Image 1 (cartoon, rainbow, N blue to C red):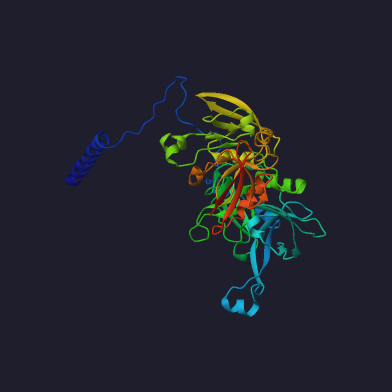
Image 2: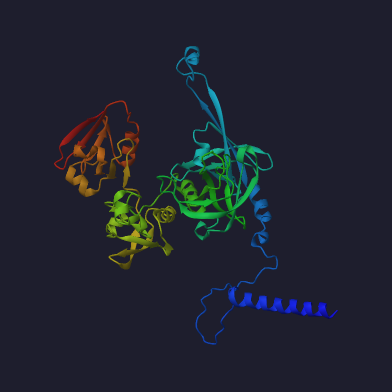
Length: 465
């Protein structure tokens, strides 16, 4: 018995020595220093009360927003009728006109007023011979196309339902925050009234060469969702689902929506003016990732670097300079060009915006009155042209035409810069919109005759092949 007691005592003593040695030599210290001074804490602490439920995702209730939204989102069917032979056999059978082919495309739309106005994407209804809208209760209506804006990919439809319809109110997309919950509602793969959830992944996202500003989300969006609603958890319409980025053509985690503020402004313009009244500041940023931009660190600038001030623009009138950096617009922070264009897209010619710019290392505030577009790049040749001002008309002795203010490298040896184009293939040009239309008709395989005036008012003609 004594031996057992002695062995137990020795074992306890040895264990105590082992534990003490481990604590002393091997265990990392874990302690906090508490001081009585008034120095600021280096740990930022949220004062929001902790939830008893533990996880934020379980606290979000999507049901109310979903119930409201599905009744205001419709299925849009686009029926197009095409003519022309699709095979050699059809050419012999029906002639050049061919037989009529009916094609059906589908998408989504959002009712935005109780009297039946519906917003959708321009690409959903493009080329339609007939438009049909099916409600969540399976009632179908013929739809009238009120107007479109291909640049923003927004179109406005109207149905006559003979009664008040459920609709969604526009929210303020400027208040959208990265990380907030959103719902995408539409008709993917012809599956009506489908609701998916996700978060806002990014704002002011531009796609490819477009200056358009999109809300990016990871809510599942697939073919058929185009024109559908992106809503917050209150059921406010914050975007119109437009595009996905996918190598397969289906959802892989990236989808894009036109912000509600842009869509609302486009719709208001179509209803009030019949077309979109778009205001421009009149600046060009440097070409992204160009050798010049990389060499001079322009890609790393936080803000919009002004590489060029367009002649006769609001920026020109406000005396903005090449090298200025736009940091804010109307108190909204500007980090990239899409931030600026996205906000300005909600404005009209004649509106003023307050810019905060950095010039030679100093911040200054400048007010710029937006104007209608004065310059554009024409199709095919890529020339940058502008409308004539009174000084141009006097100098070139003409009342019509457009002035060449930018020439791509391919045509720089032709002496085109600064001259006025007055006709293309014998057809007179009044303004930049005329020029855009006429250059758009140019064939890659034919000859094009361009009639110009030099600064002495003398006519010159160039033939491009």
